[in-house]
Image (cartoon, rainbow, N blue to C red; front, side, top):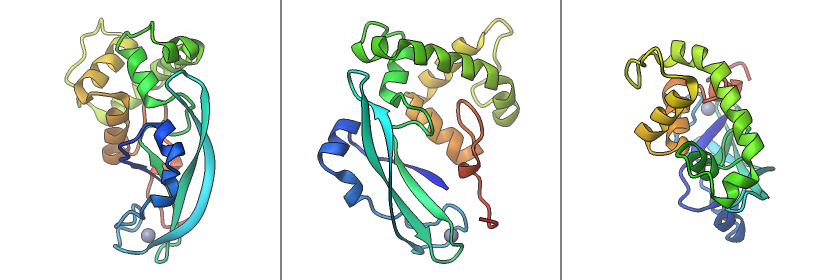
Length: 183
Ligand SMILES: [Zn+2]
């Protein structure tokens, strides 16, 4: 499973401080709900983007539950689940800060995210209902996404809400956000 972990660091600082080594196991297993059962289980590497929009690699800490045997990766909240561009850049893009260097550098990918969100939005609405109030019929997917981000404060906070409360994200529902004893 994947857990989004609050880290008060940018990706640059996380890498510089080798923060993955300090990452503590979540006290509660997100799968079986038992406490103090997660033990260190290595790392994996993935990419996000920095303040200039450049790719930056970082380590994700993994833990394993001794009870249900599931592996939990602790993804720092600056990174999106399975998407390259950092939350900071995506938030800036959705808030209309289009002249920022990171937004400019990742423009094409950010536009593709808009397309993915628009495709997913009908399903997302079935899952979350009127969480952000009733949308006007004229509100398109981009306007809705902007409103949801403005309500939550950032794309990171929106994603945390969607994952925690609904087991989904802005783009699709991933298996790693579902609980399952079968794994
Ligand atoms: Zn467990």
